Length: 157
Image (cartoon, rainbow, N blue to C red; front, side):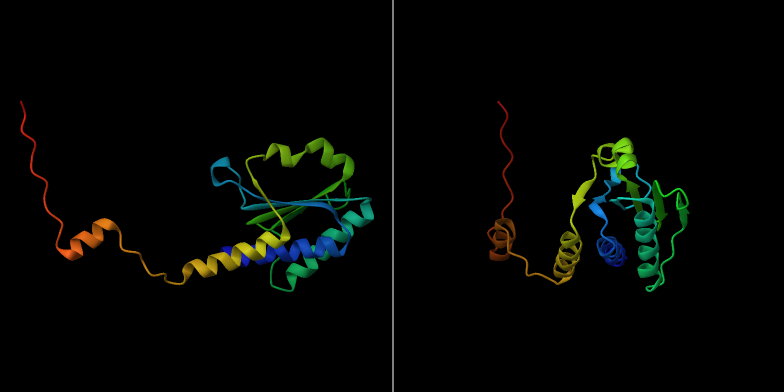
């Protein structure tokens, strides 16, 4: 499931970049922070038309893989558009609103990722799933060799 979410986030970021969204930040939320989602994607647009175009293209790209936002807020004003995809939330700000709300500072416990990190992390998780040979620990090696003996109790004075 997490791999699928990461692919959706990567697709959203690609749509943002395609519409020349600026200063894209991907925040992987800390599970202990009380965040209601796994990822925040934050970006800026230079004017209301561009902000709406970014929101439209993200929706279009994600609808092609069967994902629709749970809710959309701020589209008409286009000062801060929020697209809630449950496992990730996309925030498209005007430059002024982004500076004012400063979500990156508010969620400073979140880990900042790049679009490349999304792909790398998924590949690393696949590699972890493949069974690895275990190294024999010294204790295991002694037991196998029959050298494991019980310690004698100490004499008290």
